[in-house]
Length: 213
Image 1 (cartoon, rainbow, N blue to C red):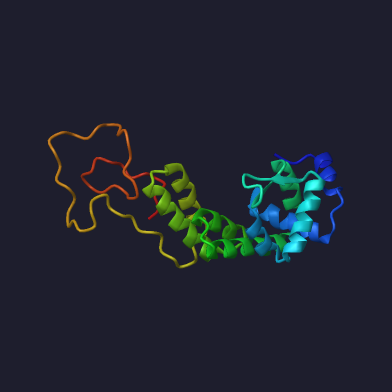
Image 2 (cartoon, rainbow, N blue to C red):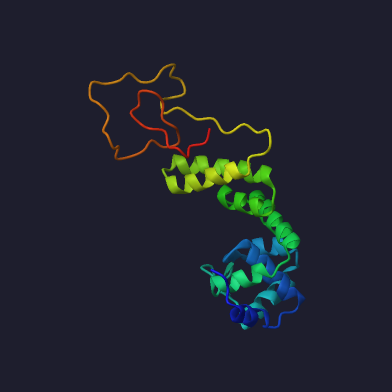
């Protein structure tokens, strides 16, 4: 939904000095919520400048303390974050996304988060690798919707010449053939779905159309 011009003007009209503007931009690129340590690394400002910027943003009613009052902050409304984000020139926005992804990857953030920022930075290779790792983790946890979205992200960022990820069978890797069929036919509509693998012959499961490979 487009942000109304009146709201955008109201947000951008709130006077911010250079340090507060840099903090706001770094926070907006990270997301609706952001952690203090990641914010400092992405903004590349010293702690005093980050603290100054955050205090000014709170005084202007743009951000509020988050779940951890001493370590995280939230934009007061998603639209405020959107206004600040859209106001960042695209080349700078991409550089900030690359910083977020690089720092987050080095600090053990979830691959889904890292891949999203590499994609926004226009870096297909690392976006693909982290999305694929996150998708396989989600599939192993039966988080099928998340896995689907992440596999699609991986496919969007598939590097040129890179083979699509291979399917894994549902029977153990050590097996040389599918499990023997039983006398009881499989149900016409399974009540659950195998996790972390794609169906093999004789299992009674249809391979999802979205499964990569």
